[in-house]
Length: 436
Image (cartoon, rainbow, N blue to C red):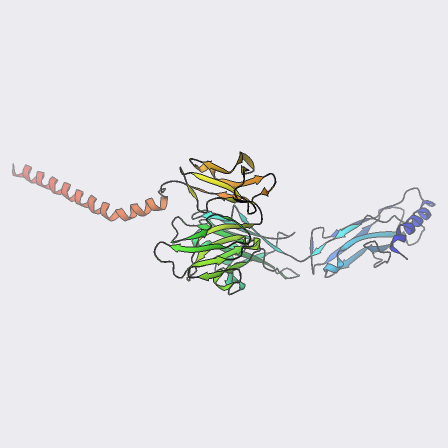
């Protein structure tokens, strides 16, 4: 019998049933448990037909619209459910010692999946030294009974590996919190979840989540040529690690939007000479975060670089100092010169219309945000974050404490000397009074 004939069969059954009763009963299917089901768990399908006049029913179970009956029990149990058991289920009942029949129930969907660990970051992945951050690991559709392990993604030649964090057990509850971020916390993180309750599960590694921690005064800077964060495709891009004294031993590393962690010195995407990495030709797959990495594992000066086919925004690589000028331009590779007369936006709001360049003469902290430009015919550039650095250095609490501690020995010596001088003066006065 064809599947399309099933409605005709049900209609015939309903007509037979209508000869005996005015009310046609409709079964209800429930899935136990009623939360998302993982592979290997026990699942029960139950068919309920409520009628006080019928003492016993015989049940027929159907899957995905098929007319083949795969079970005749009121409850059908999968002792170890698999993805092949997923589908839409319905049931139908007939009275075992009488003429009554039910309608076909509404379909209920049984979804079966493998447990998957999902990693997120709060409040953000771009940090300054001292900022708090929390990594949150969750299992899709389940919240209890799991323990978690934490890893950083490492690069070995052209292969990515995972290194277990030494204090991984600190995040066993699903949250790995760093109260004060340090440069050493920069890295690409993943997590895994494990459950001992039967059936036992260990998930695959989660999605990756990077943390970028910026220091106040890094020993090296990533110099980019052309000096901007957005670049055209099919051109040459140079990235150099330049230190305050010596740049030997530094290499360029990147983390792409596809989740790959790569070294310029051991890859096909770039060639490294000394501390300079050259990408030729550029491709949208080169979009990602780039930084300088030392032989000992230190990493500094992370820059988000975008390679785009069409319109790009020319914006500074480094943070703009408060009080300085900020100049933004809209560029397009298929015009000569490449500058476009375009509209400029900040955080989604139009701030300047139809200009070849936008100049903010005196930058303040309020000018921080995401900027992009838009041309009515050529298109829209990607967004770039403009960071504003406060002019002058702020005295941190740590700096004040260290200064006070450093001055303590001198203060103590001064207090002792003053005390001794006062004491000697008192003794001298007492001796003079005694002699009188």
